[in-house]
Structure formats: structure tokens, C-alpha cells
Image (cartoon, rainbow, N blue to C red; front, side, top):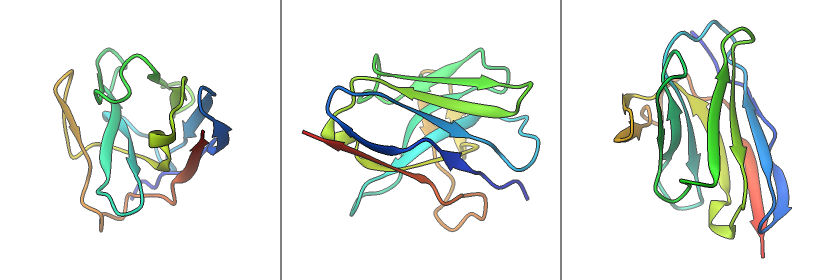
Length: 126
């Protein structure tokens, strides 16, 4: 069972930047995604990247501000977040998507899937 280890979250002011890092415990040869869950809301797909890094998906709310990338040699997936907004506040998780189609959708695994890690908290203040 591959487990995810996310890091890089923190507290920033609106307009600031953070870079999240995901280091799966095992070799990840699949598409990977970043997801987030705000209090009282469902987990949503933020960005996904294909297994080779050649395709991506971004939610409309982050397009132009977030960039997903992967370093296959190090088995790491990154999420560069710029121009952060208070509405980006959430716990961010990485995992293989349950469903992924480049430029169309990136759907998360079910909440009870053992793949989910602890996530990393991102808090953006005004």
C-alpha cells in the first residue's frame, strides 16, 4: 500500500506563495493529484498530472495561479501555489486520482481509502 506524505503548508497572507511537496512512500507510476478539503466541504480536485508529467488538469478556481509538477527521478510531486486567496484555505492532500482526464476532470478517491495521508494545512489570511 502506497501512502502519501505531504509537506510545505503554512500560514500566509493573501497574495503570498507556498510550495507543497508530496513524497509517496512507494514508487508512484500513476497519475497524481492534489486535492483539498475545507471545513464543512467535500474534498475537491485542485490539480492533477499524468504519469509522465505531460498532461495536467487544474480546477477553474486555481487556473493561472497554481502549477503542478513531478520529479520522477525523486518520486516527488509538487504544487506551486501563487497569488493565494483566503478561499484557498484548506487541508491539502496528494494521491492518485480515482478518475482523471487531462483538462477535463480530476476526481478524488473515496474518503475511506487508505491511500490518503495526513495532509498539510494551508491558511491564507486577508
